[in-house]
Image 1 (spheres, rainbow, N blue to C red):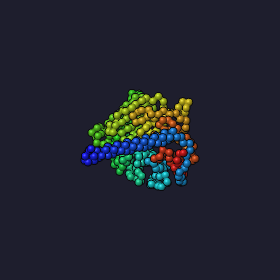
Image 2: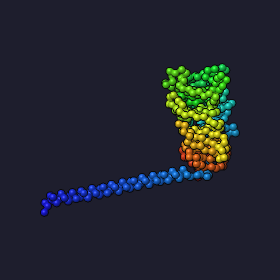
Image 3: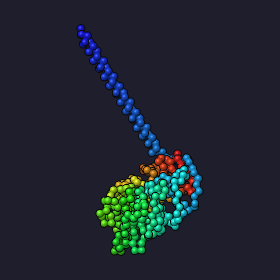
Image 4: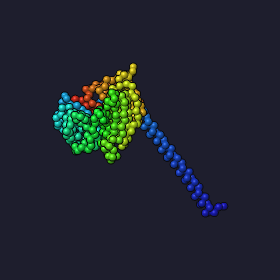
Length: 396
């Protein structure tokens, strides 16, 4: 017969063993429930994602509408989700509720507008004035001594301006306060005639497309300059350049702080580099590009003739030069824009929306004559700007 000590020892060991079994069973039950909850959550999220990806919207409802008094000659442009209205007499920025952010009066014969994220620049083509604004209103004013041909503003308020002189073209970089930071001179004999210029978001890197007639044939050059500390020891701040024989390059654009692209009459190229842009991708173009649209992540080239399936065709590339979508379409458009991974094609009466898989997400007619579409944070909600009204719509 076991002693009293042994009896209690055995009994305690038995209780501990049973406790451990129950604890293991309890942990297993909690783990099983947790796994099931995670699986159900993933399944539900996947179902919602698949449902959204496959859902096609056929109409919309007006969530909010605001009437407005607009002059006949007024033009509109997307100003970081707000609306910039401008004409020869002045400019006004307002939100979708028609709340005026600022109003700036001026007199210009041919106003030009450029926008980079939070900054907008309004200048007079062949005039001498440029106004620099952000959401709060006027931030800087530039007066030039030569006629303005073209300009680009950065997200820092710096601005690159192409100025016309009798014997040469001058590319001048200004601070937001109007101070001259640097000049780049261009002559037909040396660099060629500047066709386009682009400025990075940080206002440091400048790209210029030149055209030059050399020995009776046309040659284009794409040159990049750096006006920061990296380029200060280089002659004219020049960092890199690329020549294209027999090609005209009328478009050069920075789409983010380290990526620029060029579109020529027979060439498409992408350049990358946070300080010194180098050629990332290049391809020959067999057909003439009808128009170009872009975001920070994608570049879209539109061609006439999409075959039997449409009047037009879109080729969309990512920033590394990968062709991610080829899509024919039939709509006679006035503009095409990206909204994240959606492509919005529209004119004043109709609109169609595709995703990056080429699937049609929406096709329909507007109830008003639309001048501009502005995407919102929601992929199914948009701002329709018309002459005389602003509507916020929800696809359904």
